Image (cartoon, rainbow, N blue to C red):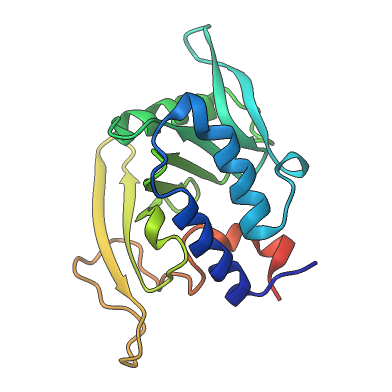
Length: 196
C-alpha cells in the first residue's frame, strides 16, 4: 500500500513519541530501525537494508556498518551523548571500503534523539531532532565543500517553510543554494516506496 505524505508524517510523529526516551545503541538500534521502516513507511526493513554489514577499512582492518541500504543509506548509530562528528568520520571511512556501485548517497549518524544526514553528492548536511522528524518546517543545511588542496569550506543555511509566502530565508549564504524539500527531513529517499 502506498502512503501519502500526510499519513507518513502522522506515523513519524507517533514513532518519535514512542522512541523519545531511546538512548542505548547496543540494546535498541535494530528494533529502532525495524520500526522506523515498518511503522512510518510500511516497509519491511529486510527488503531494503541489512544490519552489521562487514566492510574492509583502508587500514586493512574490518568494521561493521550498523545499517546499510546499498546505493542509498549508511547509518552509524551511537548511544546518546556520544560525538556524532566522530561517528560521521567512522561512517565515511566505511564508505571508502564499499564498492563504488554500492556506495550510499546518504550517511546518517544518529544517537536516537539527534540526527545528522549527509548527502554525499551535494555535501549538504541536515541536522534535526527525533521529536521533529515529522515536521518539514525548519531545518539547517550545512554545505561542505572541499577544494583541490583539501581545504574545507562549511556554510550553514537555515530554511523556514511557513505560511508567510517566502520559500526560504537564509541566515548565511552558502556556495550551493536551494530550497529545502517540503517532505520531512530524509523522507524524500522513500518516495520510491510510498509517495502518492
